[in-house]
Each structure stands twice: as structure tokens, then as C-alpha cells.
Length: 417
Image 1: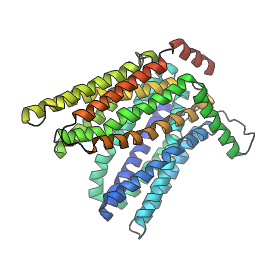
Image 2: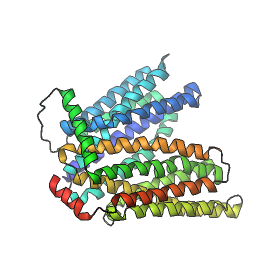
Image 3: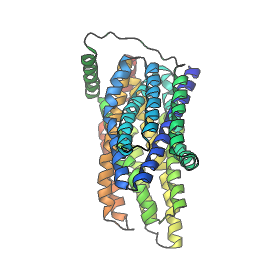
Image 4: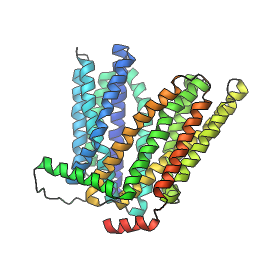
């Protein structure tokens, strides 16, 4: 099992690293060629749409050999990288890059449910939080490191060399994943493949609808991205740039600390998640809301040298634990759902969680952007509203799980083992 986990982790790190470098190189290329942020933003937006395909990937993950699916996905990524290499410099390069990134994102949307559905088959149930945390932390670190290395290599090697080199990453990842041994029991198809997959998708939706614990977990996962996730992506940069007036270097340090906090939270998720229960989960949201209030108070001192120091100290003192809490909550929910979901439905259920939660984030980002749009360096009111929203999420979380006992989860585990 340890060897399988090593292959899974190593294959995913190489694949994610290659994908992150590829997207980074192409984003710089588009900006260099057009000089237009609107085209760049449109391409990024289009490449984000395929998250809606995640449930389909989950259905496929439950019907086919997951090791073979991982290998096929990285082979497809390698082919797409080669195709991207050949479209560079052509008259339709920008359009074709957008199209191929769209296809690349469709392939990527299948990856998360396949991997998430494989982990419970490779580890003991009591180790799920630890392994999920390890996988998430290593993949997050790869996403953080890839743009740094990508920026250096882009300036030294150029986009063509950088894009074609990602083919090597994907091929190596496919070779490593081919050595995986993931338990697989082939299920017969009583209908045509399309009708069978459609029926499986309906089965997954019904599983979420009828299982109160899973349904509530999906809601909370969406609320995490809607509130805390949106605050990290939209709110934190505004705090750093607008309120604290961060220079480029300090802005980079601030964002790196926030990224590091989510990684630290993932690393220690196994320890902290064992101390959580569904009935006490609301406390993590309440604590996050309180920390944002403290951050907000600290920001009110900004505007002079001493006040900025106070603002920076409270920013780091509160931002770090908020990032950790967000990772811990997410990994706790994922591990819990993995335990109580029937093995034949793991891919579908994990894909539904990913799809719903990721679709909630852009909605939160748009609303938060509108809230912050008209502000200057005084963010007290909007920050207070953000904290209030997260405290409301805490109340909702308490309401959803107040009647859920640990015995309910244990009973579901016994039924689906």
C-alpha cells in the first residue's frame, strides 16, 4: 500500500507541476502577444468552465479502472501539450490556445474525482485525513512552486521550449501511474454506455439527495469556497494592495504566507480533523469570522508607519490560522464523505462535491468584488460584512449538523464498508 501511495503521490505531483507550468507559460505568452488583459481574462474564464464536467468524470471513475484513467489523462495532456507547441506563432494562435486550454481543463476536471475515489481504496479509514492532507499539501506546494520556476524558465528558455518540456512531465507521470495497483471490480453494463453513465449520474445525485450527512457536507463545502475561498482570492489582495499599500515584494510575501497557511493546514489536517465532529464543525467558521474581525480592527491603524506595522502584524497573525482552518475543514469533510460513501459511488460523489463547491467560488468572488469595488483604503464596512457572512455560515453549519451524532456516521461506515 505504501508503494502504491508513493506512485500515486509522485505521479500527481509531476502531472500537476507540468500542468501549472504549461498554463503559466501560455498565460505569459498571450499577454506578451496581445498586451490585452481582457483577452487573457477571457481565456482564463473559458478554461474554468470545464469544472462542470467533473460529475461526468466521477461517473467514469466508478465504471472504469482508475489507474488506467490516470494514465490516459496524462497521455492526453502530453498530446495536448504537443498540439499547443505547434499552434504557437500561427495566425490563429490565441484562439487555438483558448480552445486547447478548454480541452486540457476538461481532462483536468476528471482528475480530482478519479484520485479522490482511489485514496480510500489504498489506505485504512483511520488514515484518510492524514493521507488526504498529505496529497493536498504536496499538490498545493507544486502549484505554488510551478509559477516561480515557470517564470524563470520562461525568460531563459522561451515559451516553445517550456511548453514542449511539459510533455516530458506528463509522459513521466503516466509511466509512474502505470505501476499503480488500485483495486478494481468491473461492473457489467446492462444498457448502452451512454444510458449506463446517465443512470449512474442520476444514482450519484440521488445518493447526495437522500443521504443527509453527504448532502449537508456538499452544502458546507460550497459555503467554504463561497465565503472563505472568495475572501482569500479577492479580499486578501485588496487588503494588501489598497489598505496596507504593499510593495511588489511585500505583496508577494503576503500572498506566499497565505498560500503557505493552507499547505500547513493540510499537513496537520490529520491531527486536527480527529478532534473535530460534525456537531462542532461550526466552531471553525465562528473562529474564522472572529479572526477576520480582529484583522479588520488591525487594518484601521494603517496609514502611518506605526499603524502599518500593527496592520501587518495582525494580518499575519490572523491570516495564517484562517488559511489553516480552511484546509482543515475541507479535508475533514472530504475524508468523512469518503468513509460513508459506497465504494461504487465514490467517484460520482467526490465529483459532485468538487463541481458544486468550485462553482460556488466564482459567485462569491463576483459578489465580493462588487462589495469592494467602490471602496478606497477604508475597508471597515465591507470587511465587517464579510466577517458577518462567515459567522452566518457558522450558524447555518450548526443548524445542519446539530442533530447528527457520531453514531450516525459510524452506522453509515458499517453499511458501506
